[in-house]
Image (cartoon, rainbow, N blue to C red; front, side, top):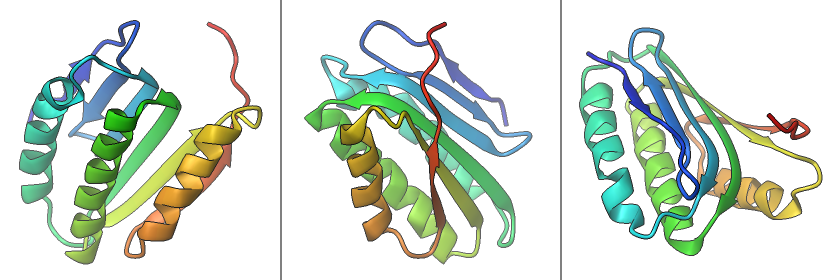
Length: 132
């Protein structure tokens, strides 16, 4: 399966889904004008990827989101729900929610998400933001 790479824009995050090493990364700000349209190819790829995994396969998800608007928050919850379902089906899913300690809103968002997820491993990882 090919990897999915979408470059970041002013209002959308970088998506790096590497099927070969089973690492899924989303980083940056997410406030696209139409979140459903932006994330549609992401979900299509993800569903195909997850359908091809055997139980006990390890998948790492790195989320380093600086900002989520309300529609992107809903999309992120749907993304995490798919990962939770995969974990319930036996896939070993680890989610690393990286946040800048100065970004209390994103920390709280990660804490809220973690309370809803029980089958996967959800790590809150403090990582100070460094300008590029």
